[in-house]
Image (tube, protein in one colour):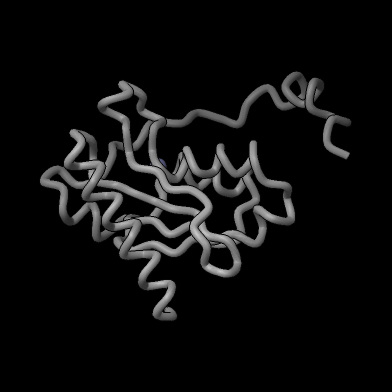
Length: 141
Ligand SMILES: [Zn+2]
């Protein structure tokens, strides 16, 4: 990791501290262009917004999908205080961001929580393939 990348990652950690100081879970992220210029910053606001999806990574991915053309998005790097969760990873993939640099891993984060990580949700499927594929078939070209 370069010195500039460490500086950007430290800024994401500062944003996490700002989130906590503002009454929210301690997570922060920023999006930087290819030259390291900061394009946008976000803090977790899940508690103050009463919105379980108000993770900084998801907010930045939505911003990038709205505001950046695909080539520009692909040239960006997200710096984030913690490895993105599954919800945010999906949004990052769909928004076409180029790369993610994180500080804490999910395993390290779980080690800092008294109860560990999130409970697993039981999943049943796949099912009804012939019926379910009808509205999808031919959509993706
Ligand atoms: Zn997340």
